[in-house]
Image (cartoon, rainbow, N blue to C red; front, side):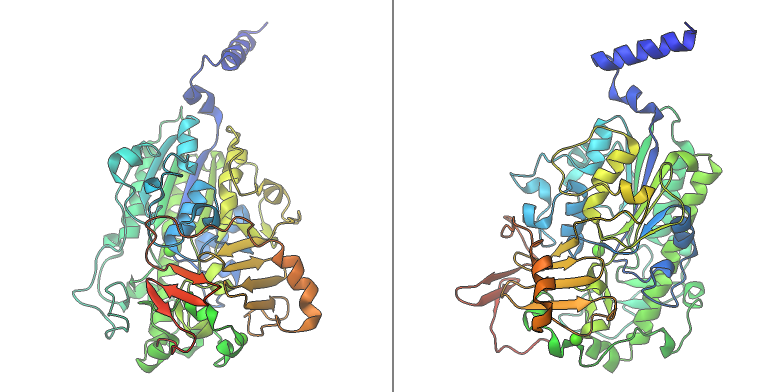
Length: 498
Ligand SMILES: [Ca+2]
Ligand SMILES: [Ca+2]
């Protein structure tokens, strides 16, 4: 017997008897570079959401790996989307629908093992920088459960002295701002997030795999960028998204309740204040800036010889409207609000895969477990995407499901979007002929079967908001037909806030 065989035998026996720590077991596992982009809609070159979007690094990564062209968040808002992804549970299971609560404050979920925590338990060195969770994660003690090393919280970075745009409705929220002003890219939070992550990649111990989570803040508002990123986009109306002025005529009134009264201005305001083009260009400029930061991270892996042994996953937490359906912002159940980039690249992933099957952010947790060959979990609600990462044409039976507060759900299959609101009103779109979701087909009798086929996927578990829920929380009582938005009753005759 060769010496190496004896060593191997000894390793296997020790492993079988549990004598080795999981750290030793993990030594031959691939690294994970887990990249989040905040509020990143489908305005990504290869996703085709905006014909002028310039994202060469994300497109290159997609070509190196497999990209999901029909991926959707589980909630169209930061905290519930990120909580769902990291816990592997739907918002309808946890009741986390709003910007609060933080899940560790909930008796039922305070000990839940998150994605990063599972990798840590399996012997990975776990690191985080920038925005992974929505806000503070309960201090160093709570954070240490999941991450061995943490960098800065990232965020906006350098800001102008005062807002660049006129005062916005609903209280002139400080985050509602955008535009170009003189500053240096190096002083932006996202540049520094990337720089910190690059240092970690360069100094990573080679005898232990890492799980490095880097969360970019842009193109979240305030979306400021330097002139060079604006110069990628024409300063004329050719940058504006295609919209229909009467688009909301056939959407139920209840659709407004999901974004009833928000700091994000309506299209009417951005037009009247000559801000539509500026907002669109700002968002595109920030998207290209973040794309360049993703490029810096991938380059660091390549330079240090770790690219071939690292699973890279890039995801956005939800979409963002820029005038479509009369609004800006999130909190909707249409493609503009739910569709996100989702790209995997690395060992075991087929290069050049473009998957049109529905995928959910919820699927990231079991997918990474399988790709890295670590201990599976039986308590996850997602389904591994590994079959699609091997062959992008592999069918998936389950559609992508997005929920926004109890009772409001969107079911997105390969060709259709079905929405049902808490008051029973509905929408149906045929994405093959109507990619902008302009024509609601729900009332046409010939589509009754399509609706039935999709309605069966509405989550069976659909719990009310968890204790401490706040901000963007909507409840509805069917018996009294009373909707309550952020604590205020909305009546059928109330005018839609402008
Ligand atoms: Ca977000
Ligand atoms: Ca319409």
